[in-house]
Length: 342
Image 1: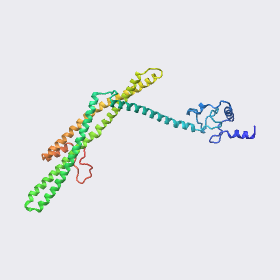
Image 2: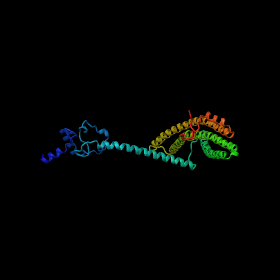
Image 3: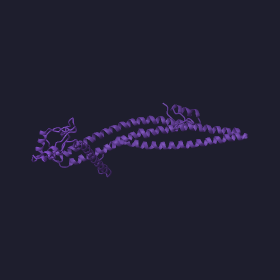
Image 4: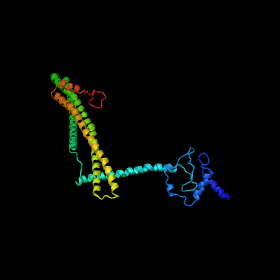
C-alpha cells in the first residue's frame, strides 16, 4: 500500500472528545470493508430513530459496523436532536389538522341550522330555563342602570340642599328680623342632606350587591351555558356526519371511516350530556342564590326609600344597621359610599 493510501486511511479514523480511538482498528477495517462493498448504502438506515444511538461515557457512539450513508462519518447527536425537534412539530400539525376538521364540521352544522336544513338537538326544559335567565339578566342590568341614575340625581339634590342650607344660615345671621325663619329652613335642609347621605349609602349598597349577582354569579353560569351550546353543536355535527356515512355504501374503504366516525360521535355525545347535566345543576344553584340575594336587597331598598320620604330618620338609620352598612366618613379615605362589614 502506498504512503498516500496509508495517510488516507489514518485520516479517516475518528476519535472521541478525549482523544481516544472511537473504535478498534479491527472495527475500522470492518467499517471500510462494509462501505466499500456493493449495495452497502441502505436508504432506510438514513432515517434512523433515536433508539439506534446509545451514547457512551465519553459521548461517542457504540462501536459496531458502520451503516451510515458516508464512509468515515462520525456518529454525533445531531441527528437525534433533529428527530426530537421534529416530533413536537408533527404533533402540532396533527392538532391543527384535527382543529380544522372540527371547525369545518361545526361551521357546516351552524350554517345548516340557520338555513333550516339541518337537525338540531333541543332540550326544551333546559332551553326555557336558559332563556329566562338571559331575560332576567337584561332586566337586572336595567334596574342597576336606573338605580345608578337615581343615586346620581340624589347626589345632586344633596349638593343643592347643602348650598341652600349655607345660604339660609348666612341670611339668618345677617337678618335679625328673620333670624328664626331663616334658621328653621337652614336646619331642615341640613337634615334632608344628612338623610340623603344615609339613603345614598343604602342605594349604593343595593347597586353593588345586584351588580355582583349579575356580573359574577350569573355571568359565570352564562360561560357554562356557552360551553354547553358549543358542545351541542359539536354533538350534532358529528351525529350528522355519522348519519351521512351510514347512508352511503359499506365496503373495505368506508367501513374504517364509519367506525372512526362512530367513535368521534360517542365522544362528543358523552361530552354534550355531561355539559347539559352541569348546566342544569348550575342553574338550580343559581336560582337559589339569586332569590336569597334579591330578597335581602329588595327589602333594604324598600325600607330605605320609605323611611327617607317619610322623614323617619331613626328608621332610615336602623335600616343601614340591619344590613351592616357604614356611612362614608367625611374626609376619610373610602373608594365608595359604603362598605360591608362581616
